[in-house]
Amino acid sequence: MQMQMQVGQSGKKLFKEWDGLVTHEYLDSGGAPTIGIGHLLTRSERTSGKIAILGQAFAYRNELTEQQCWDLLDQDLDDTERTVNKAVTVPLNQNQFDALVSFAFNVGNGAFLGSTLLRLLNQGKYDQVPAQLRRWNRDNGHIVQGLINRRDKEIAL
Image 1 (cartoon, rainbow, N blue to C red):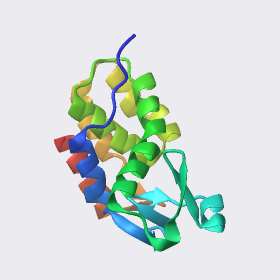
Image 2: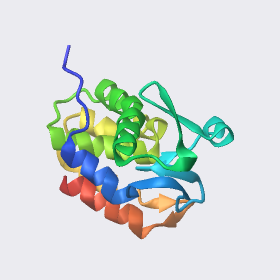
Image 3: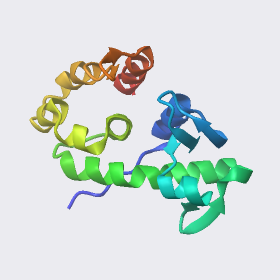
């Protein structure tokens, strides 16, 4: 069985670049309550005012520490890392893995699993991945410059 990969430091820097590191609650570009490095607050987190990080509950209304934000990102990435590890059947280097986790985390695991990008990648057509990434540049049907920029960084990585 292939070793399970995790996002490396280059990938984590990319997440911080996209989402920033905000220690207090804010509204993301879509208007969703968010904290840390792009963590969308769940209904129960918003109701309780607490967030579970590595099995411990923290009152986030008083702000999180920078380390708590990084730990929360690691926790948030677990599911997407598992999805990418399980779905991709061809060898990946660390940067390729990090870029795919960034992409899948952004578009959602379901969209990633059903994507032409994944199908072509698993056929060994690595050269077609950049063009497939560039197709994912819309939010609510509108082309978004931030998504174009994100895809370009994922491709560069």
